Image 1 (cartoon, rainbow, N blue to C red):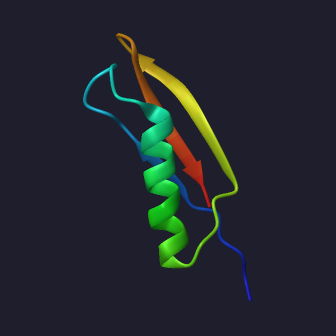
Image 2 (image 1 turned 90 degrees about the horizontal axis):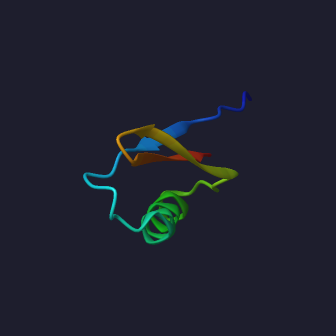
Length: 56
């Protein structure tokens, strides 16, 4: 059986969004689906916005 890596990019609506809370909520949803989050990353996008990337 093959293994697959999925990258989920979450783009918040404003720079004031708490990315740590968002990361926890998204990780809970992914675990409930039956997967395990391997790595998380925060990348700058533009104008102070940052994207949350989850690898699972």
